[in-house]
Amino acid sequence: MQKKRNAIFIKILLILLGIGFLFPLYWMLMMSFKNHLEITVNPFGLPKEWIFTNYTKALEKMRFLPALKNSLIYTTGTCLLALTLGAMAAYAISRMGWKYENHARTVFMMGLVIPMQLVMIPLYTIVHNLGLKNSALGVILPYTAFQLPSTILMFYAFLRGIPKELEEAARIDGCNVYQCFLKIILPTLKPALATRFVLIFMNIWNEYNLALILANTSSKTPLTIELNKFFVTLVGSPNWGYIGAAMILSSLPAIIVYTFGNRQIENALTVGAILK
Image 1 (cartoon, helix red, strand yellow):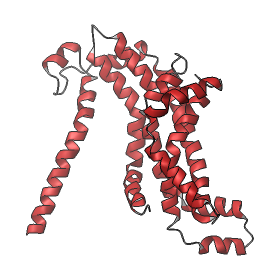
Image 2 (cartoon, one colour; image 1 turned 30 degrees about the horizontal axis):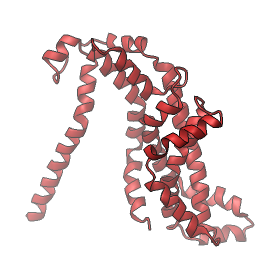
Image 3 (cartoon, one colour; image 1 turned 180 degrees about the vertical axis):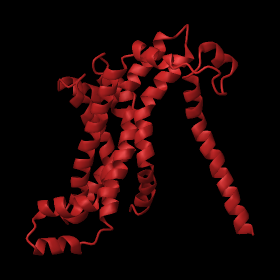
Image 4 (cartoon, helix red, strand yellow; image 1 turned 45 degrees about the vertical axis):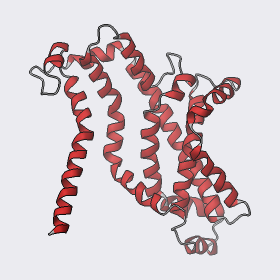
């Protein structure tokens, strides 16, 4: 009986936590279909009159499509580069058995404890001196550098659980190290690759600080910067319906990715549990 009571209590607690996490999304969605007066009088309830023009007005007042394109370029480019380099580095330090593999793993682990804010000024100087400021590559490369340590260590933990007999059998059949990586390791890494893709996408899509200093021209700004500019234009006479619509539009890609990849987020906990 005590175990049943504890299980019921935990379920109720989890339901309440879920409602608490989902409520801001619900509030934002309802706000996007109301006029300014109804938001003030009835902030949390369903709209009495559903106003869909908030979305068209938000699209008109903010540079949504160019900013969406930039965000997709930065996010997709970072995901592909971080996953490719991370898989290769993790394979090297976990399976190839070379002399300094432990030192290399220590270096990657040190990358987890370096805060982004600490290196923003030197990073800006490097990107500017290389002529990459306000370019897609100038944003993707720093993003990739910050995502690589956690990506490599997650893949390293995953690869340690794969029996080496698979590669030995492949070498007996004539595969070299590159063929072993492409034909044996990468297919086995699919769950970890999907997990990291979702996590990296969520992190980069919502990133603001680096984008503010590395891509601050109007043609290169991602959605986070453009959304902030949109808020500034409404200061003094805020229309919360427009703001809610703009926030829903900006959040929609991340919500879609999370909806289809939430199972992979759960798998990340299992993969991380075996990290040593």
